[in-house]
Image 1 (cartoon, rainbow, N blue to C red):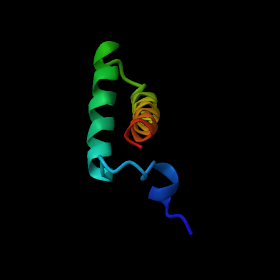
Image 2: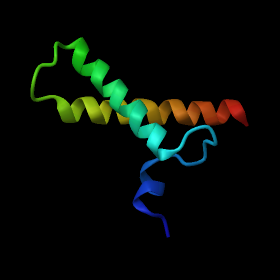
Image 3: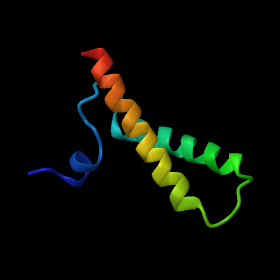
Image 4: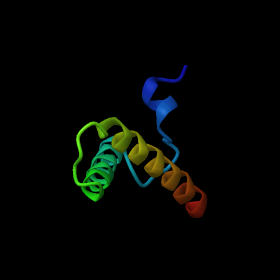
Amino acid sequence: MNTVNESLYDTNSPSINLDEFRVMVAENAYYRAEARGFELGYEWEDWHGAECEIRTERRYWAKEVT
């Protein structure tokens, strides 16, 4: 049975753990907010977009490592 973490995050990459993933997402979301002048009301979009981008990069990294 998959846990929530296993189903949401690509855990096949040996180079990053969940805490590191969250830090990467937070930094990415911050820069997204900064790029649009920290306009309020887009926090969820920034976070979700950052998660999607990091997940996509991690899948690519995993393919490059193997």
